[in-house]
Image (tube, rainbow, N blue to C red; front, top):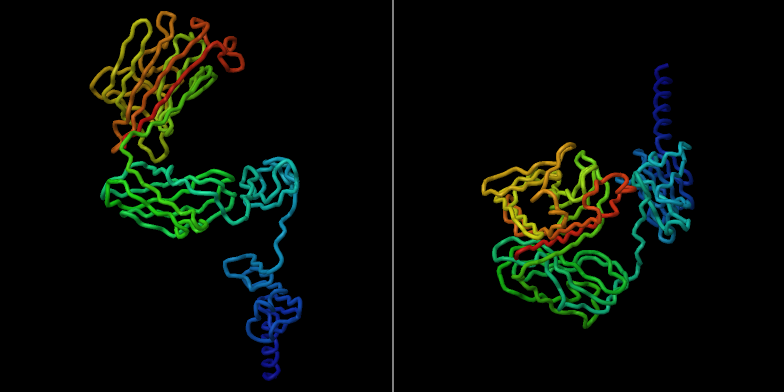
Length: 440
């Protein structure tokens, strides 16, 4: 009886072992399930890559291999030398189309990462993925080898444009070119000159003219200009005779950027107060200015306001030095030696003092002014000229100026839904000219 029980136990264990791996057309399964399509796998050991080309394998972790034993990091691992993968082909009629596989007609329920190939004509053909709110197309740039006509090294620019001996530097060198063919390229071999390492950034060429961008990092050992030779080593796709020499110039002149805005006052409810405004922003995005008028206030009583545009990691306030000048038939000016402005809130100060002062923040009920209140004097438009720089940012070399005028054919009229139909005050015209000057 004991021998019978022992025999049955051995038989049971053998059966468990026998079904632990299932091989179809193979006595040597490479996973819990292995279908050998051509029935050509070796009877023992690991089949060769050629033998595995027709195999379907499932591992004990649920990974699937087609033509290959799946990698441990892959849920699906596919190998083939003359075949590809076909994603579902659909007609995307809009960038927010709901494929509606679940029948609820709610596009937002589509899982992020969903992949399809668009065969429609509304959107460009190609592979798209759902990012949670819209279909995004994969880059469909040409797959040709990169070719350009010529480098224009004489027009190269360094940004930031100045460097100092012994001071760590990080920036970019831009080298113009002509005759690009749209091909993608990889980084080249880094070259180090005077302590700065230049490395071509991976990207793709424009069709026609464009720029190659080199990262530039290191600690320079000179304050003077120097040259960098660009060869097929630094730019792998350069043809013979296309190499050139870039002169890296330590810029000692200021970098000036200018932006202008012209338009009418439009409806707003920023900072909780309804009214009408026009907004302008400095080229670096650090500051915005606006002329603002609460609802049911006369156009001639518009005030200017300033906003410090800070990110989550930026300080809650910034201190600036400011000078505000206004001119009409006469003129006047006010200067604040140190004025504190809050982050991401419209505010104003007409401080005329050497002491620290705090700008007044816009709320749902007040109407602060940056500079003198009201941009009209005796029913005549004033010309405003403002200057400021950040007092609290260590090492800043940026200075800002602003020119401003506003006109209205009905300066005494109030801003209402009648004088501003559809939220646009058609009788007004506003002009901002913002200049940003960065010292070397």
